[in-house]
Length: 129
Image 1: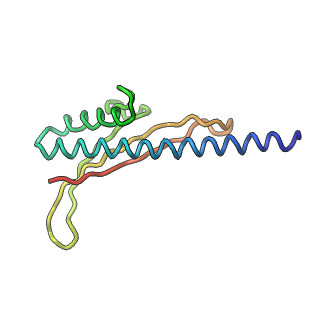
Image 2: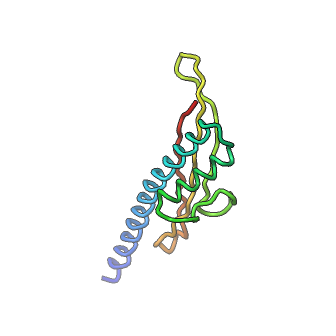
Image 3: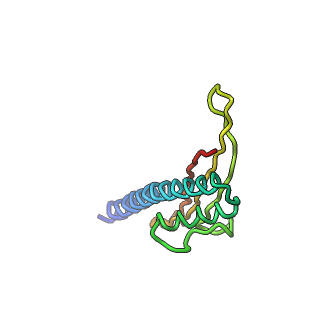
């Protein structure tokens, strides 16, 4: 019992932490998609990149069901929403399209005493123009 119980508790902590990180990754991917779609729609409509980034951050918060948790002002803080724009060429057609990418980073507190926290990073892209 003295050997098995600590091992069982450690395995349960590992399983719970892994499950929590996986669930967070799925949630954040959905939120990043919502932000990318909102940013692509804004940029397609001719809005400024800063406005699109703010609107994407708001869409991420709405998708998560929170207000002002995810932010785009401090890149070193947790729950940071980043937006980047690139261009892409469609396969063999020579047509150039614009791509916006939303990346979200979040730290998850681990239950295991050996691991202090896990970092979950996810991103989503949307094409426009």
